Amino acid sequence: MKKRTVAALAACVLMAAFVPVAAEEAERTITVDEAVTLAMENNFTISSAAVDVRVKKRARDLAWNVFIPSVQATGTLTRANNVSDPLAMLAAIPALGYTSPSMGEADHWRAILGVNLSLNVNMALFEGLKATRQGYEAGLIGYEQARALTEAGVRKAFYAILLADGSLSIARGKLATSEQRYEQTRTNWSNGLAPELSLLQTQLAVEQQRPVVMEAESAVEKAKDDFAFLIGLPIGTRLRLDGEIAPALLDADADELVSRHLAGRLDLALQAKMIEMSKTAIRAQRLQRYTPFLQISQGFGSALSPIDSGNWSDDTGAFSLTLGMEISGLLPFSSAGQAAQDKADELAKMELQLKEKAYAAELEVRNLVKRLDKGKASIKTMELSVALAKRAYALSEQGYRAGTIEYLDLKDAETSLLQAELGVLNEKFGYISTLLDLETALNAKLN
Image (cartoon, rainbow, N blue to C red; front, side, top):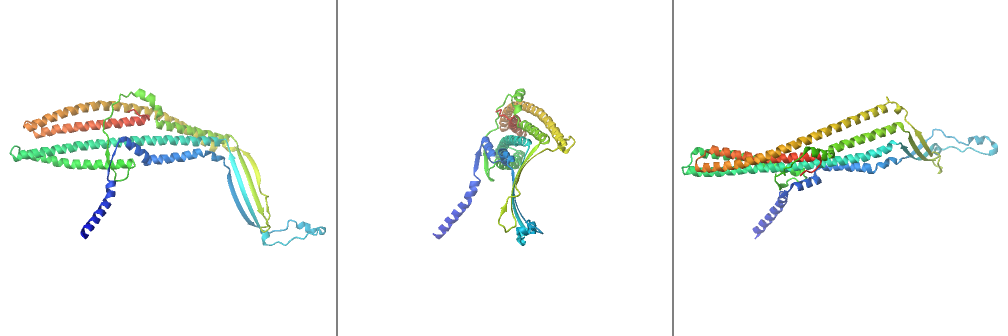
């Protein structure tokens, strides 16, 4: 009885130890759209971009704080080396009967408390408010750009794994066929119906294919682990991708796509926003140079002297308005003048960059459309090749069983079929990848 109890406890301990591992290694089925959703929620790049947007939004919402005056509170304790009675001259008039008091240590000390408020106002401040709003808008564009690039990357990675899975399935099928052929040849050899050379050839084919399949399996598992990291899943999550490489072939017109969608590209929108921000900075700099500033100041001060008198006097407070202007900045060869010219040159350079990016963007779209057309034609050609290769392989296999075709001829037919099937998968993946690039280039969904 005691042995059974110990055994039961040991079994419970082992079950408790292995339950978390089983939970961690549970397979999770995921579609491409679910993967994109997870990436939008968990991807580090997008999360970092979201933080940048949050910072810029806070700056925009609190941009008015430039009109809050600076407030400074001070406290000063001083000791005078020499002190005298300010009414000592009255003692020289006997009729007044005034006698100067004796000065003690407390008369040397003086306490002062003060509060100063100041605010500098210039017309450039209003352009600064506009700049913070534009900075937030640029941050939103950058955030959308990060989301679009991440989505395209996730979809490409998803279909790349499907391609690797398809290649692995073909390799496994080839290995299984080779193993069946080896067993059949061994049976024929045992019965004296096949030469030993055929047996060795089929055995060698099996042994050569096994490490290839094992390496492909390892590569697929690593790709899935990297994909889980990309979409923010816990380490150790085992994935099964639910999908297929079956793109819908489009009839894309480059001229129509350029006219309808090119203006909506995020990189062009971001460049245009940067130009807008540069113009705002130039206006702010111009206002800073050519308009006066107004300095508003209010001070409050109270003094205690002597320090043991107990009487605070408000004798240092003051209100002031100062209107001024920086004269040296008006000179074109001053540092401010040179900075203004540098800003103007930077703006001209940014406008040239926008034109260059627009030209390159249109060229990219047209090249991608050409690649789509080429890919569509290649897919149709490769599908026809697969059909022909399947027929050729079936006839070769019948001939090999009947003894009219050599084993090497059968292997050639099998290799041709596998190459055709892999070619179709590669062409379809290339088409999907190009389509995703085109959608990213246009910032639009085409399929």
